[in-house]
Length: 298
Image (tube, rainbow, N blue to C red; front, side, top):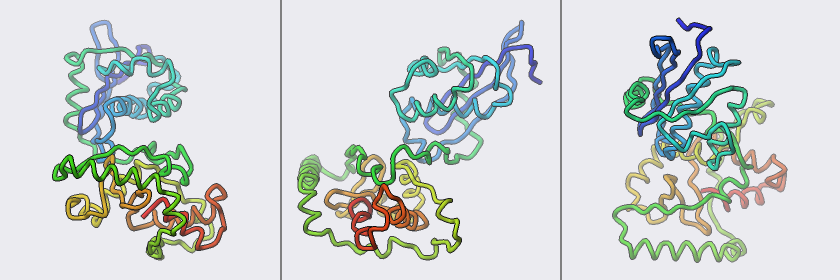
């Protein structure tokens, strides 16, 4: 049972498969645990950089134990040194910066703890018991839907079966493709996008459009990995010359290359977004709407 007269301290850690944390109070005879937590990473979270994973352990623990920490000063102990100034200055990592701003209502200090002394949180992170679930931060749009994939930073990932010569050739082809983007647009990039709309997913409720959420790159990756057809392509990528993988995302060879959109409601949302949103050229008509979508998605 926590003693409201004693200060709180949280030790956090992240492994490749999950996070762990322990909430403690400092007694005269030492630190005693109040609560524990552990959580598995989703497939998307497993691909996060180490700093984001360690930072996520902090924000998840603080929000989990909000009722104990709100309005009180407390200490966070982590063995990840880059996070020591986490609550003191702006973070270069955009995800960590959003989390930092989200935690501004709390009063805490981040301290370094050696890994060999962070044994409880370390064990919990390596033996997570709670199933992974999507973090709402993955669904927080930082850009409009029209620019998320336009400004997507391309980091090439080459399958092991591709030789260096082939990889160099592909890179040159994609570079040339980007340079001739305008030429491709003028010629008209013909793709059948009637299938983009899954009519079974389009609601007839008048207020449905207000419930529709934009998606982030991370959410798109997650949805791709949940799609059986896309997973089959990813698992046999060497057999599909019209596709390639970049930054864990399945892309379609086009001019320029575009991400593959899985079946389901997300396709209907894209159509509706581009047709109804002023920033995306609202109500330009079916043909122009489809043309804009063709330039960004497959």
